[in-house]
Length: 361
Image (cartoon, rainbow, N blue to C red; front, side):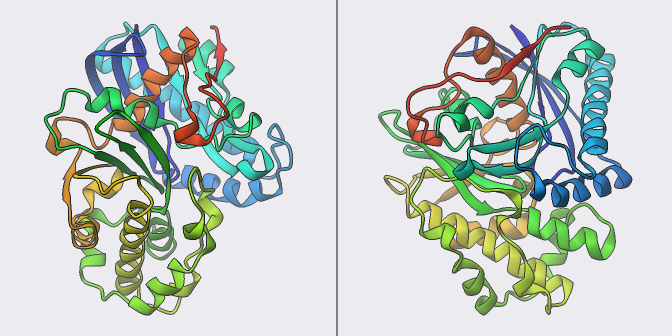
């Protein structure tokens, strides 16, 4: 099937679109990709929605700014697909729509991704698979991360030393361990770009630290990094996952912007190193995707702390920017076919589980 995958991650900077031709088990062809940025006023509403989502006690509740935010998310994704189809042709057969995570509390069997899948299907005139995480969480799994199911498919033909780790650094980080025997372990590593992006946006209105330039000019406060690393999340054994708001950057509030960004980048690198220590074996190769792969300052810190072969997804012939959207294209087809989306080793699901809701146009 020709599937379009959509991803708006925890950095809520914009919508990634990717076309993949797949049967859900193999990838026949990667198609083009596209990006539609959220406008500043849209990001402001999404930021309010994240705060208001703390009050949600049932996954269909939409207090405060969540109603407006859900409309923004749905409309932005529709516009992204329409622009993509206008540029690249309209031969897709199905759409994978992750939506925007605003609350993730798997310990309470609660995860909330806003975005109206049925409205998107009607507007696009295409079947849309959405609400990917709920079934796993309802069964006692973490509901995250989801992309690890697809990482072995994406990396199967790469000539890289194993075991292999795929590290996605979006707003939150997550790692997938792929053993020599195909063993699969995955979990969230900790904050990635979210804390850095939030500080920068609050002070400058910029969405992210382009090329890590501001962080590169700052000084790392190692005492603050140690304070941040004392968070109890790092003592938990996987499977485990995070809400975007589980961490805060208050220990860096007294630091100048450049020092704060440098310190938060070092915190991200330290959290990845701590995650690496919980993997079954030290990975011979790390593949880094997501916005963090575009931050040379952060990448340098990772190389220093991990002491391993670290490459971006682009370096190995994949797409650092589109990898998550590509994953949700494949996950949509897997959902459509009733194939598993999660496993005990990736989310702590009680068994291999499918999921997702299909909306027809």
